[in-house]
Image 1 (cartoon, rainbow, N blue to C red):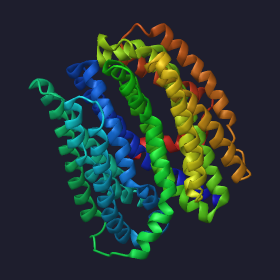
Image 2: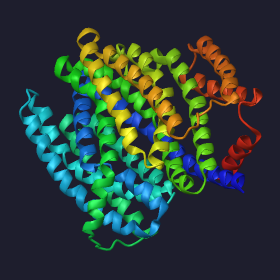
Image 3: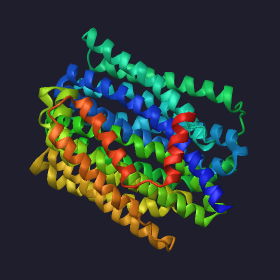
Image 4: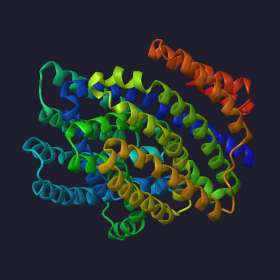
Length: 482
C-alpha cells in the first residue's frame, strides 16, 4: 500500500514538475532573449544599473511578502477549506507591508550618491512590490491545490510580453526608465491574469477578516520570512556591494553571468514547487513515504545538476558571446566559477523543502542565516581584491557550506542519511562521456552541441542503468500522455 502511495505521489510530482519545468524552459528562453536584447541595447554599464535596481527591489519585495507564500502552500495543502480566508487576510497584510517597505526604500536610496536616473527608476519600480505580493499569494494557492499548470501558463504569457517590451525598447531607442515602466506594467498585468484564473477555476473571494488568523500568520510565517530575506540578500548582495565599490560595467559583467545561473534555477524551483505539497501531506501520513520521496528528489536533481555545470564550463565562452556579445567577454570566467554552484543549489532545494514540510523552518532559517553572513563576509573580503570574480567565488563557497549544513541537519533530525543511490554513481560514467563529447565538439554550432550532449547524456544514463525501470516507464507515460 505504501509503495502504491509513493508511486502515485511520484506521478503527481512528475506531472506538476513537467508543467512547471516545461513552461519554465519556454519562459526562461524568453527571459534570456529579453535579457540579451536589453544587454546589447543598454551595454555593460546600463545592465549594471538595471541589475542594481532589480537587486534592491528584490530584497524589498521579500520583506513585504514576509514568508506568507510558503505558509499558504504548506497549510492549504493540508486543509484546502481555509484557502479563501488565508488569501484575503494575507493580501491585506501584504499591501500594508508593501507600503512600509516602499517608504523605507525611497528614503534609503535618496541618501545614496547614485545617479539621478537610477534613483528615479527605483522610485517607479516600487510599484511592483504591491503587484508581485498579490500575484505571489494567488499563485501559492495554485501550488497548494497542486495545479501548477496555471502558474506555468501565466509565466509564459508574461514573458512573451516581456520580449515584446525589449523589442520595443530597442527598436525605439528608449532608455532605462522606459524599461522600468514596462516592468511595472507587466507586473500589473500578471495580477489581473492570476485573479481571473483564481475566480474562474478555484473559488470566489469572500471578505473574511480574522484577527486570530492574522496573529497566527505572523507568528508562524516569520521563519519563512527570515528565510526569504536571507535567501534574496544572499543572492543579491554581490551585485549591491559591487555597485557601491566598483564600476557599473563590473556590475554588468557579474550580472550577465549571474543571470544565466539564476535562469537555470528553474529546474530545482519547478521540481520543488511540485514536491513541497506532496512532502507536506506525506509527513503527516507516512514517514517511510516522506523519506522515500525526499531521497528520490535529491537523486534526480543531482544527476541533472552535474552535466549542466560541466557542459557550461566547457561552453562558457561561446554562450557569453552568443547571448551578450563581445563587450561581455569578461563575464566568461565568472560564469565558469558560478556554474558549479548549480549542483549544490539543486540538491539544497529538496533538503530545504524537507525541513519546511516537517515544520522545521526555524532550523532552515538558522542555516540560511549562517550562509548569508558567510557570503557577505566573503564578498566584503574578495570583491575589493578580485572585483566581480570575488563575488562569483563567494557564491560558490557559500552554496557548498550550505549543502554541508543542510545535509548534516536533515540527517540528524530524521535519524536518516539521505543516501546517494548507486544509480547516481553510475551517472558519473554518463557525465564523463558527455563531457568528452562537448570538449571535442565545442567549435560546432552551439545549439547542436547542447542538444546532442543532452541526448548523449540521457542515452548513456539508460545504457548504464542509472534510471530504474519504473522511472523510465514514468517518463515514457508522461511524455506520451501529456
